[in-house]
Image (cartoon, rainbow, N blue to C red; front, top):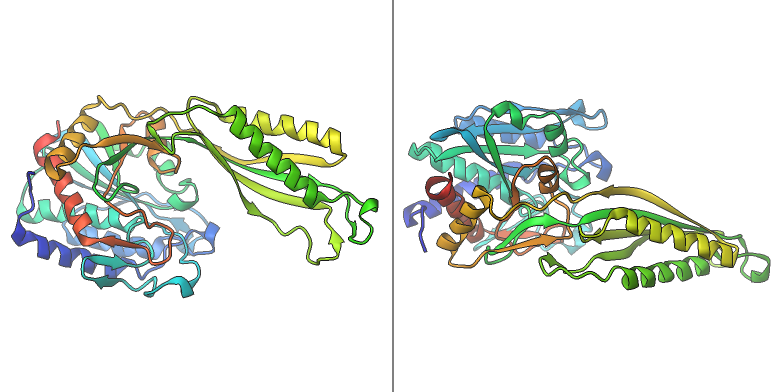
Length: 412
């Protein structure tokens, strides 16, 4: 295996990574949609750090009056390469989800805890790992006076956890990357595998639905005078689940999992006491659909079943579409960027890269929809959103090495 980082640099880089984590992880950066104040304070810290590296930081903030300072911050910076007409952008989102139940955490979620190779804290993997990786790559190039073959761009974006409308989607819709001219490649370190072999080049369609079943509320001792929305809701949702599994049978081994999924998830309380038959029942569905099918296929199936069920039972079932997101076209494996980066993985990691598709949503889908080649890749144990979220310093160092190898040896 070929290495760029030598043994003398490794401890120095680990110290920098830990120091950087301790600057921004304690600053909460939670979307107003999730009960937070947004990312403004964390962005100020990271912007200052970029400037300390000698980089010019550009702010492209999206207005959001719900957030602190009334903005959702986005920051771009660049290290110039030998070719100024091509740029590899490392995209890192700076928002996190809340920590959840503090009792489930072994270590304080907003205090970075380092135990040997492990770093614990909310957001250290998702997506703080991308932040420290991008900064460490830039620091290595700047301090050693090395010019990469192409430009290295860093894009720190807000709002990934709740839709990216104030983050990457805002930047792409405003044509911000076009301001830099030339060709643009995008690396999104936001998911991966422990050996670094998993390279995500495609995603599934996403659909969120609400099923509202309406019956007639009555006293539980007199069920014949009402219409139990809870029972009917269970019956309909099970019928919908069965129909989906029977009709969406396509298999595509490129994706993990290799089938479309449609799962009932959230359930609203239907009544506050035990001795009343509820008149309304509400269930939410999360669907991840293989791109060979269309989102409307699921919606039409659900609405058709709802009409038939309502007619047969006397209940009234509504299907509300809460949101959907088309996956866009997969990133082409024969693009120069993808081919070069896969070679960098082979040569630095000693593993064969596995291009795959996933059901999870990342900001890469918005880049693909605008025609940009984008891959999602990093080395991780996939602890995002869990209590005791962690990453490993050895993973980060390996990723830095692979990215540097691409920039210095493979980029064209």
